[in-house]
Image (tube, rainbow, N blue to C red; front, side, top):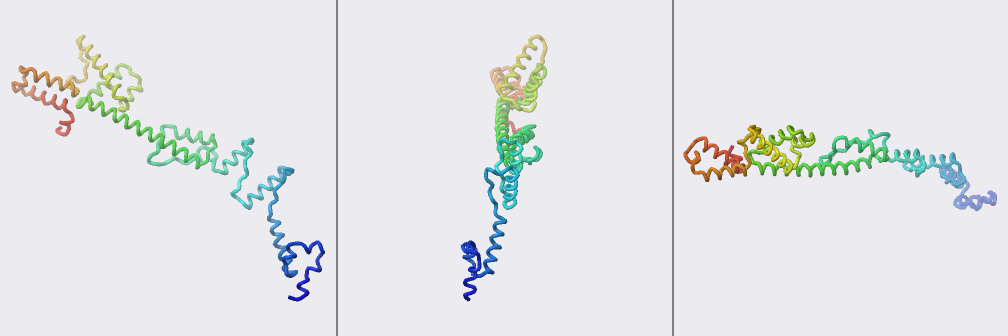
Amino acid sequence: MSEENTNWADALPEQMRTLTEVERAKSLESFIENMKTTREYVSNAIRVPTENAGEADMQAFYEKLQKHAPNLMPTPDMANPDSVTEALKRMGLPDDMKGYEDIEGDAVAFVEGQFDTLKQWAHEAGLTRAQFQKLGQLIGADTYNQQSERDSALKEQMGKVSEEWGLSAEAKFKETLDFAKASDAPQAMIDALENRQIDAATVFWLNQMAANMSENAEASGQDTRANSNTLTPYEAQQQILEIQKNRDHPYYNGDPKAQERMHELMRMANPERYKDAG
């Protein structure tokens, strides 16, 4: 390297010779390149305003930041509702409740009107789309589980009714429903009976009331029973015992009607045994 190139910085003012760009440069040309790089860096550099900066300078600072970092979001002013709403929208808050997507899944359910109400409340609470999906999945799954448990419990209750009444279950259930309608029972109870969404104890209680009313009507000369030939397993078994104790009954004399009646009583007393026999 020539002496001229080695001492190229001697021609610069003394204050400039201590600059980093001068110390790193091996020639005037490299110094000029270094200065260009520095100026480009400075032009892209972001200066953080001090507490003395006004709103316009702060806004310009935020815009410059977001230009270089689009995903960067300023902390909202919690005392300013518009600032909070704007921040929530950037995170996924829709413009209105219609912006939330439906909740789907095999194990998700909502009662009538529940989903629309959930959307409305979610938007009022400022939930993002992702937050709404998560909350909706949890509520929908909980509702589904409650409905499944309720359906299982009602199925168990109807099983108790069938077990208690045997082959007479359908006839006695209709007898109970007819009594509820005739006695001006609350519509909710009638609906529950029609949909088989009622507990066994209530069904038995209503049917007993129907039976008591029928007995009172019979005592006054009126027969209002739905079907006197329809018996529960217990009632059928009691009639079988009565026939067995009465050796003068036509059954023992081979009377066809009496024998047919005994067969019917045996079917009603043992519905599970004769279920597949027709």
